[in-house]
Image (cartoon, rainbow, N blue to C red):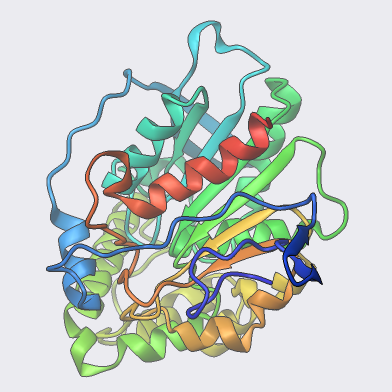
Length: 359
């Protein structure tokens, strides 16, 4: 049974049965219980949690990163910021972190996971998606939510070229969709070195997310996303003017309009809806067989909780699904201090550490 709104932290394979009136036995496959999320007293509103988590100042204790370019197709490279354990030991696990829409490797949650994981003995790779983090010149394409092959290429480089034997992925929002899609596309053929995948508020149903962004109460998020997407398009126009013309573009005020006018035609989809249906990880979630932690919040403003229910996420025994009542979009700032303040970050590192360092 997976954790859900009425069962916070209930382990996925925790089966109890009554043997006698005074005696209980349980399965030997019990997973560590996930501590329930207890939101900060002032952050029980999904919008407030989302906004505060994006702007709260933080400091991080992590060594300087090594810059690395990963070749993901003949024309495109991704920029990674790598924090290697001393001597770049091959027996140390690696966690690769993927950011969300219009984010970068410098995001607070990216650095927060990196700090926690590094101090638990992980190598850490903070990835930038195509064009993000000032990398427009590294690829002739834009990015989209279906580019899971990019992260399979990163995995293969770390596994085959570097020789790492334990590799984990964690993604937030759009990045969560990408790593979930990658896991689902592996199906039963899970590579030996892929030990686990984590996703926080993954946008598995892009149409549902686009519809949610159209609501009046989500106007500020929509405006921010569209402004960022259009700015990125204009930067691509400066590098590749014929491929990304400005003349003839319709007025774009919503994410769906951007995907209709730009993303879909550039990547061979009929329209935004066709794009959404083909790249959302909801299509392949049932095929996931690698151990996975999926966290979402029931009060996420624009990744609807109903989309996880419709996708029957909790029906897949490989997925440990946790859905607290509060948390906003990728927020999860708890009432506790220290490592538990940013609850989802800690859960990711605990989940991966339990598999990288068993016993």
